[in-house]
Image 1 (cartoon, rainbow, N blue to C red):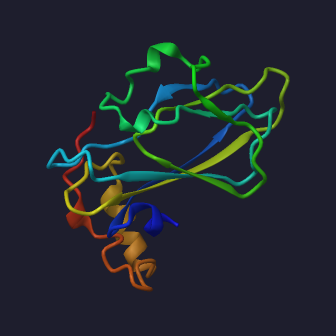
Image 2: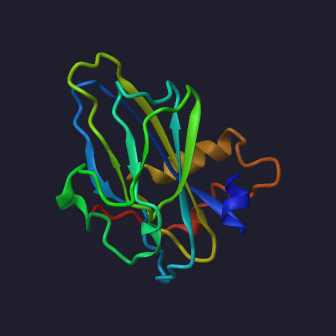
Amino acid sequence: MIAELLEAPFVFHHLHSARHDPDTGGKPWHHDNEPNDVGDPGLIMVHALHYPAGLDESMGSLAVLPGSHREEADKTARAHLGTSELPGEAVLDRLPPGSTVLLNSALFHARRPAPRTTRRPRYFVDASYCQTGARWRPVKPYWRHMLTRARELGLDRGGWPELFSPRHFTDYTPV
């Protein structure tokens, strides 16, 4: 599916996971797009948001702002709005276990907090991929280790020899 969306050679960017306890707050409006070293906004990054336990109204929801990926905006340009409702937003609050949401990384989205009465945690795995053609800024200090380990495990077999190649990235610098 990633290959179909990106319509070009792509590489793995990062992976992280989290367990959001019921009392974990939301995450304000933001996007996750990273810059590339040639400043080409036409190169696309996508995020695959995996929800192993699904989503329901007791866990909080994912709100997205359709079309916002076409704007040139800083990642936190809407953070001052918190997790408030925005005109035109779409809300995902019912996903079956094992669901994955694919989105352009430049799309603004927010994690709404779970209701105070809930007792269910929210499990979340985030994987990101980007088109080749420039070098991308890594977001994790251990990015080289992650790519090396993926190659050691042979995860690049099956026609994806560049999937975990470090040559597609700049050096890590904390922001």
